[in-house]
Amino acid sequence: MAPEIYFSALDITDKPENRNPHRGFSTKSDVYSFSICFWELATRCFVGEYRTPFYSDNKNLQYDAAILIQVARKGLRPILKPGIPSALRTLIEWCWQQNPDARPNTEVILNQLKNLEDNYNSNPSIWNQAFAYNHPQ
Image (tube, rainbow, N blue to C red):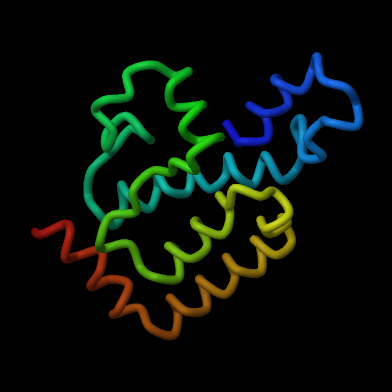
C-alpha cells in the first residue's frame, strides 16, 4: 500500500487544514503499486527466485500492519538484489518514491518501458547475460 493511503486513514479525524495533501487513492498510489509488482517480476526474472515483498527481507516484521507503518513512516521498500539491470532498478525506485509528486505518471512510465525495450533490442547480450547469470543451464 502506498504511504499516502496509510496517512489518509490517519487524517480522517483531523481538521481539513491539517490533512495531508497526498491522501487517498490516486494514479500516483497506483504507480507505487506498479513498482511493487514490477519489483516482484524483476526479482523473479533476474535474481531467479520468488520473494514475498517485505517479508522475505525483514524477518522481524510479521504483521501487515507493521509493514504498512514502516513503509509509510520509515520509507521501507523491498530490497533490490544485485542482478537487476540498472535501468529497471532506476524505474522501480522512481515509482516507489515516498512523495507521490516525485513519482512518474503513467505516460512517463510507458515511455520508460519503451526505452527499456529499445535498450534491450540494441543490447540483448547484456540483458540476456544478466538473465543467464542467475539462471544457469
